[in-house]
Image (cartoon, rainbow, N blue to C red; front, side):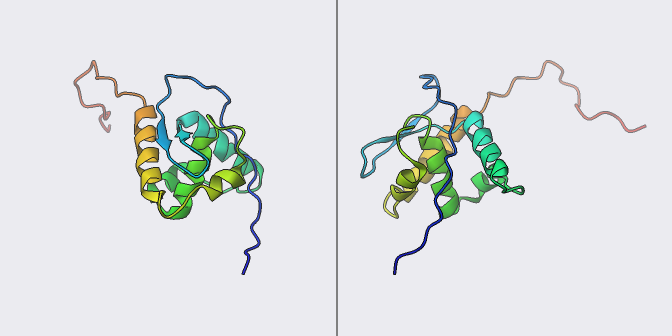
Length: 132
């Protein structure tokens, strides 16, 4: 029985191919897919979903969920920066049970690597202001 799938709207990350961005490779039926998930890609995707009518979307919360559907969404978002020629539907079809674990590991890796490093505090005092 064929499922009637609603086509995904393109959720494009900025078209930069910045070589300093953290990436991970995922083997797929279409060849190696380079994943890059940074704050820019996440924010752009969230804004596109909100414009499409999904007012309560929070991709940052979904990133923590690690469900199969969330991983597929993040695979599509993180693959678009380096594979803009592939449509979201094509990317969606590359996610299989066999590569789901590799996708999960890669997304976690590139997300953590994209976060800014914590700056050591110059002031060692308690950052919480006293209550008066």
